[in-house]
Length: 256
Image (cartoon, rainbow, N blue to C red; front, side):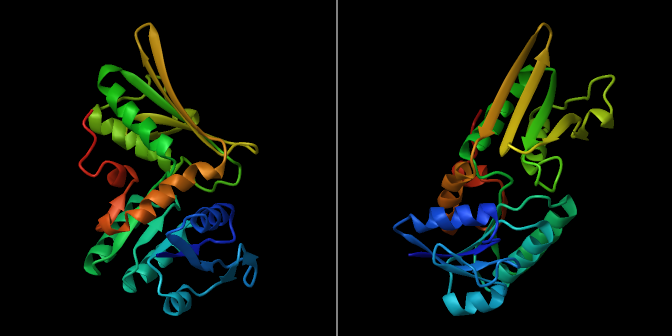
């Protein structure tokens, strides 16, 4: 049985994780952590605010974290110190954060997966974009999320830009500027934040006389759950710090 602690358990994503894990015959939620809603009962999980204490009480197989950047960094360190694999859907980490975490994880033989997007369709969107990149001259990214999302651009958009730049060096349009979006790896990213949205992204390629658009839409938070469940079932494959669900889906790399 895979025994799971959910950090951020009172939030919308945390509650989806509790619901999804509880439906699996080989998994159970043994603890829920959040600074909000302490004492509340979410599908039989009582919310608490002390991760160290819950680890000692429940002997978990894994921690799933959907919190905020600062809380997630602390949760990761606590999980690693207690030799518990940590699966992280929190976004907003800087490159410095990731480097610091990698050093800490390596020094303590930790096992951590950080994924900017757990929707399998979003992972495939990035892979398709990588396939196209060498053949098109220009590209821009539009990412659209709910108005409660704190970071901008999204982690998925940044990961997409970095994946594309590894295939080809793109340059912003001649009249590009920060007013048109954040530039990452020479690629303009435009961020939209509106109520009614969940998580959406378009990768738009342009070339002489043509455009090519790839779009992925998460129309509910349930879309992220198959990826979370897949990661939990493959926690033994997590070694050190892994960034991106694609590293678990395609452990030998996807040849494109």
